[in-house]
Length: 339
Image: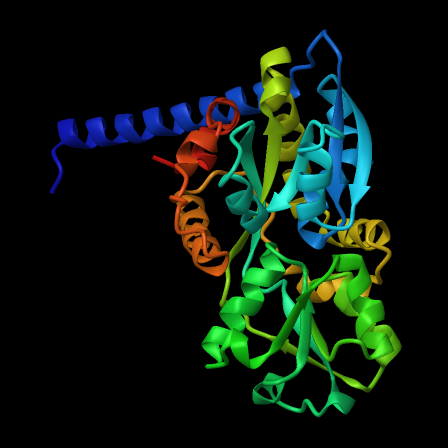
């Protein structure tokens, strides 16, 4: 049995922990709610994909403006385009993109930083195929014309999917094209299948009607969607990352509180229907975070890129140096698990 002294000490310890936790939460909320006096203008490269929903929610609810940011939005059909056509061509200052294009970009450049992951999912990519191309099961993909967006998450998913089903990439006729051109290509019959995600899968389904099959593989590939910032923006406005992340942390709270409302909003942004978005919604984990597993994912992808592109002279980049942890640690330290 506990002595009165030990019991008192235990109660005191528990009370102290609770008080500290409450103070930490209060401090976090105070940080998020603070409104800076100086306003800054930032150009955002918005990828039109379900995993970019936190950015869409922050825009719709004027959360960036709340934290002193005037946002200029430029929309892109994919995260890869937002990164390569937006951030790296100086058309935007921040951009959302999935992990694979980031892993690939780090092979040749170091002028950007990852400030947070904004979504993770292991069931957002799929392969759509035409039935009249003689495809009724996965093995029928052999010898078929399959397209995807090169050096992107859907390209990596296709690689893993074929590998998991014992199909060599040499056994398919693989081609690459822009994401927005894939639906029309399969509808016209120029290709037999493509690897993608919404809204492009839905666009092809709508036209093909009963003449299609969908191949998915939940759990095969955990994909991270990231927020990238130009180093020049951080140099010019050192607190810009904190302001951006405060807006996105609030957006995360919104999406958890009003999921149905923001399914509709995401569908509008993607020019898709709510039923299609709802199908994937529960597989999307919207969380502003920096996880240790992200480093492992980027390194795995770098190995694949080196093999796939035959880059024998390349080494796996030190992705830890590309991650700017400080702003998120200041706002929500519990959301950072990178060491």
